[in-house]
Length: 349
Ligand code: SF4
Image (cartoon, rainbow, N blue to C red; front, side):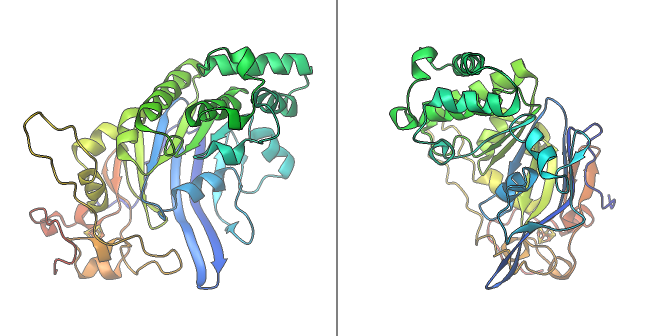
């Protein structure tokens, strides 16, 4: 149980190796993503989960090389998609992949949609950027895609402007725009966070259905483990710019190994049985430290109830728990250190 290796993806569509994305700030260099390695296989849904500040959204932006200067991806990072290294390829190769082979959906559609163009023309424009085709054919594809994302009367709705649509419909338009080129990979960063619960469930069901029918892979980024449980097949838990646990979703929910993941799981609301008292949700004490000052050793040690000296000085590697499960926690090497669940941080070693 000491192999310091991440779980390998045997046949990845997207392969990220040692990704390091940094932002110089007045307080020092923020190492937002710090040595992340993961793979996404064709057709699978990989969830990345973590609190805000864990590095998950910067990971999404890095894959698409949308990091704004002075932020940058450090040399040595590699992001391979279909044989192209997105971290280093020229702008033309990147343009050919972004929007065509990799689609993207972000949390707030109003920031991604242009308020002065109809939604149909914005989707049709995506088609015309990537394919030589007539305006009429591109418009037809846009309307068909609006129908595919279950927008009723799609031919009429295509003529509407973003502000005329509800939040849920705007997110469906974003999905249509991301999927109109039938990408091999969709990156969805908190795609339902701004929506109410019912609409959120509808959009997630739609996403799962479209993934099946289009046969694409999805990289789903969220702070919400309940969404991961509903949609993803595999999950990477991020903390402090690193992957701290990776496993198939069922395995993670049945037997998480990292104390941070255990904390996230205790914070997931569960259905309440009639006449039973409401269960108290446990919060993880403290907050994610700033990326300019990650603590020495295990980055979670200030918040971990099991921390001992080794945790404060030695950064844990990703220990292989099984062929498909890894945890960045010294408890994998010293399980006797794990005592009865201790709900508060700061338990002495
Ligand atoms: Fe907690 Fe130590 Fe494991 Fe970090 S390495 S999660 S501090 S037990």
